[in-house]
Every structure is written in C-alpha cells, then in structure tokens.
Length: 387
Image 1: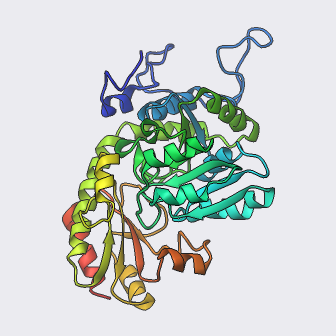
Image 2: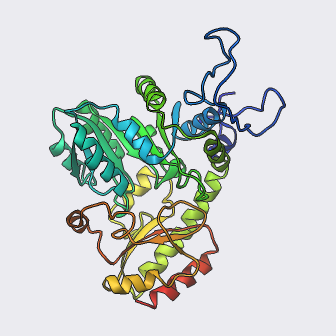
Image 3: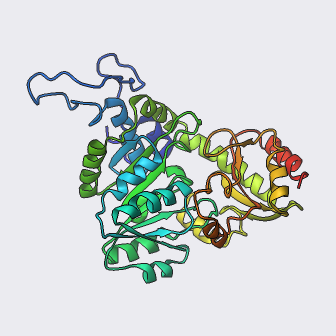
C-alpha cells in the first residue's frame, strides 16, 4: 500500500509507512531479523536480501518509514549521525569545496576539519542565516552546501529555499541536518534540499538508548551513490537499533507536540527571569528569525539556549543545582537535559571560534523533555537562584 502524504496524515504514516504485516505469521509489528546472511535458491537468486550489510528487512522497513516522513523515497540508516555525515561527504572528491554554516554540531566541525580536510576537501564556514553570505562564499569548486537549521547551539535559522536556489545555480548539492526540528516540524526535501541528515540518537529515537543516524534523499542518482557508499563503507545501523527506531517513529508526532509545548513554556519563563540575560527559541516573537520559523517550520521543537547573567562560576553553580533536568550531552530524549556547550558538546571547536560565534561561558543549552511542565519550571527557578 502506498502511504502518500496527500492521502494520509503524519501520525498515520509514522505508524504504517514501509511496514506490512509479517507474511509468514501476520504479526502486525515488523519482526527483528537478527541474521547476517540469507539462503539463495540458486546462485544470485534470492528474495531481495543476500547479506545484512547490504540490506536487512527490519532496517529496510525503518528506512522506508523515515524517508516517507521526510517526503522522500530513499532512506539509509547509519550507525551514527557522524557516519551519516561522513557518508555524505564521501560523495565528494579531493579538490572539492564545501560551504558550511558557521554554527553547527561540534562533531561535524571536527569531522570536516580533522578528517576530510586532510584528504584534500576544503571547507568554508559562513553565517548562512544571511543567504547573501553564501553567494559571496561560493566557488567554482563548490560541490556541497551544508546547513543546520535551527543551528546548534545558537538556534539560528537558515532560509532553506533561498539557499537551495543559490546552491543549485552554482551546481552544488544542499544537505540539511534536520536533527533539531525532526521531520514532524520541518521537511527540507519539500523545500528543495537534496539530502537530509538526522542523528536518530535524538528525536527520531527519542529514548536515549541508542546511537544512530539516517540519510534521506528523493533523488535517484544520489540514492544510488549513497546505497553504494553505505554498503561499501559498511557503516550501517544494526537491525536491533533499526527496530528500536521504527518503534519510536510511531510516537514521534505525539512526542514532538509535547516537547514543543514544554519548550515554549520554559522559553517564556526564562525570558521573564531576572537571572537570565537572553533566550534563543524560534517560537518566541523575540527571536530575530521568528517570521522565518513560522514560514519554514510547522513548530519549534524542544531545543533552546539561554545565557545566565553571570560568569562561568555562576553558570556552573546553576548547572550543578538541577534536580529534574539532567546534566548530560545529547538531546531529543523524553527526559529533559541541560548542558554547557563551551565545555561539553562544542569543546572540539577552538576557543577563538567559540568566542566569535557567541558560544560563551554563560551559555546553556536545554533539551526540554516531556515531563510535567510545572516541575520543569520549578527546577529552573531553583537552579537559577544559585546564579
């Protein structure tokens, strides 16, 4: 059955797309196929699978479902978001040039600068919240534009449609890390992007119990290349983790609505708090790109950052006083997490780059979970008193 967006809503497709009752038993849930190889009736004659690095029925169902939710046809489940990023960059060759947004996940920057730059691929880091900066950064050798929107950790938005036009006019592909928004709130393929990446460790899985990534495209030629690379490099997601992600997709819409409701309550609370200097959340009218958020996204997820009024010592006191929020890296789980980008998630960025971006010692990143909002606000108030 074709679970098209035109015929079925997001929550329905999250439960059914890519999945059929097991033909052997009628089981409504996709089985977990823990096998490495598949019997062939004759050399080269099989039922669609020969070796689980190349394809696994559990992983295939998950890949089809997440691709459907991104309004695409092809998905490739990877062992981590970093593996997904590396697989995308393997589409390039030595001498190629990449324009990347300046505010991004520290692990992506580390991979670009300390791995691929040594292999002859050049990277330029530009504030792409102003599309005009891309026009000035593009070169004849530019083959890929890489963006995160909202960005990590400063919650900057990038106009995907504007970047698509500039990228394609220059003959470059556009890849969008859509981890912060999830396909529930933003679908870059619909806006013209060529490739979408998720760290599925985050919202897609949503339960802080696995590491994973997924790369999605609706382009046949790109899909053929990604399929080859996924098989050749071998950084595929395990069948068990794909099974868990497929389970989690079924509640993605429900969870994202709860994350957003709590995050908006938290953002409004922080914006009015005497110990808070600044709040960055696209759902607030005070966000400088609030209008773009309303046009490009259908909601604002559970991610926000804020600056404590004070220095590093004051910020440390706040971070060490929480009772409900957990001080931990990562994001997108049902539990609320809080962290210090300069010391934790973005420590791999050189100090001078962090300073130029505005990732200061008093910046705190929050992944708002789905606990009772009153408990979250009380915990924030209790912790901020230490500032």
